[in-house]
Amino acid sequence: MELKRPVTIFDTTLRDGEQSPGCSMRAGEKLRLARQLERLGVDVIEAGFPISSEGDYNAVRQVAAEVRGCRIAALARCNPTDVLRAARALEPAARPRIHTFLATSDIHLQFKLKITRQQALEQAAKAVALARSWCDDVEFSPEDATRSDVEYLCRVIEAVVEAGATTINIPDTVGYAVPREFSRLIETIRARVKVIEKAAISVHCHNDLGLAVANSLAAVEAGAAQVECTINGIGERAGNAALEELIMAMHVRPDAMPYATRVNTAELWPTSRMLSEIISFSPQPNKAIVGSNAFAHEAGIHQHGVLSNPLCYEIMTPESVGAPGNRIVLGKHSGRHALANRCAQLGWPVSGERLNEVYAQFIELADRKKNIYEQDLLAILGAAKIPTAEAPIARAQSASGD
Ligand code: KIV
Ligand code: ZN
Image (tube, rainbow, N blue to C red):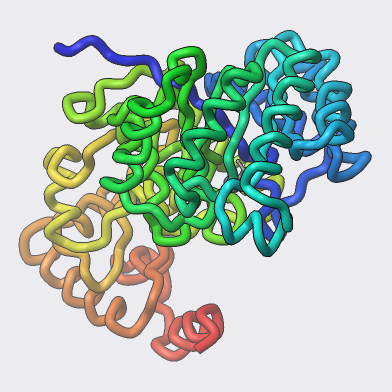
């Protein structure tokens, strides 16, 4: 077996994740999630953007003071006020990191920052040097890197590494990159920036085209040593690369992705649920790894397979991600195997002709009713009254709003 290359997991749920609509968190909530991220085993927690508000400054300070098992990062634009505010917020940290960023694409320089390429290069190098005077660990991100001129991007990277940056993070800020192009960009930076050996390369991918995880993994293959990601993939617009997807891709396919992280996969589900509870919204049911349907089976053929051997339709066990177990959902696509199994669980084993009878009634009901509950089955089995046809249909319709 090939030796696994270590990859640093930089979690930005508390910063970029928090920037998505409806996801803001109070200091106490950030601290609670940060402690869980520490249990999960991430290497770096980006706790916030201290200049953005007094509340965020205090949240970063609190996380820095109390979470000692991870490196704690704080974000700062490339100006002295931001950098000093981040440095102050990180004062109590055991292992602080200042993360500075400045856009390098012409579209951002011209329309947002209204400065020239040369001015941006100098501003970035100056801010990194200032950050280094406060902290040994400084990350720099050329915002909108994937839409920047590559030659210029390489010059900026060279300047900030010479100014003391220890990590160079390449953000696909608008989720525009595709995997092959993004991995080539990492290879180009490694080949053209002579001083790059002095810094670690990181990537930070947004999910506007649904490619954030694929792009991140392509970059790791091309030599990136750190990935930035969020729990449940929350983040600006369509979100960031989902931490749980990156981790389980590496875990399930070490043959294709021989990378090592410190993450305890059994903490993925509890972390996802804690975040959902804090921000009051859950990932979509079909979300990979942590969606409520990630280990649910409704089709009869699938149910038969899973009941015979879960490996038929599951490439990872629910236990491996800390999920409560797989779910066999009874519906109109279910078959006799799943039905017999559920009847036995309810204490009413059926087989042979009796199973055929129960199955016929069950399918007839399932055709009319979206959800089949235990009471419905018990009613069919003769253990309770059979519900009327109209009532469940009306309930299902009003629940779905159609
Ligand atoms: O998406 C982005 O470019 C960012 C940077 C601050 C790293 O979030
Ligand atoms: Zn981002």
